[in-house]
Length: 258
Image (cartoon, rainbow, N blue to C red; front, side):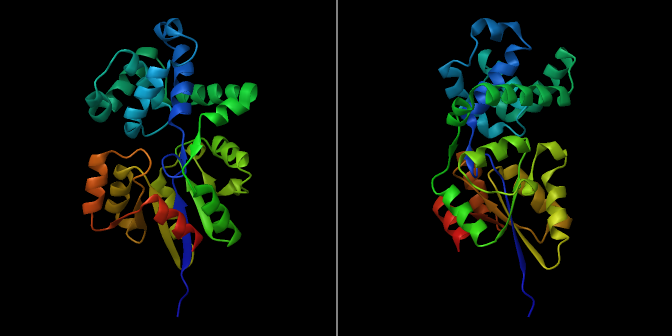
């Protein structure tokens, strides 16, 4: 009888860590370098902007987009603009600024790097880990479970957050934005392992649906994490999907420790 090679591919933001507040503050600082009206509004993100960003965080796909989202909030864009038109707003901003996506990604990373260098404790304080997740990850690593992080965050920031929890997560198993590869491609790499059974946990329903539709990824087991940034509508949709398993946070942490 074949023993399956169990591989666990976990998203980071919205599954393991809540970084919405840090993202808002970093995005404000980056946007202030691009648009004078933000610099004039204050050197740091006002509390009300941070609070408003939490409400639109579900529509963020990749961190650099938050720079544009913060400006949209300052200009009081409606929720529908984030939900339905974010890509259009991002493309328009890139055009108006005469900047590339890679330039905004680099700016966002540089702002974070500066914050870490100048005041690591306050950067860490803007994050929180979902209850029980670090303990569960620690237990899974001790059991030598095959864990991977698949994230649109830059890898060094994930590593810094794990280090703050004294979690010895191998750096080479954190697969992030630096690789410039979609999660579908990373999942395909995992499936190449002998007798691989890949479990993919993600809080973005669109990503799970995209993976489900990919004929090369039919063997991947899909799990939806509703405790992160998911909207109520996404939770309802996920519950009705025949091939997506809906976790509770308690179920997720228990599953990692089994």
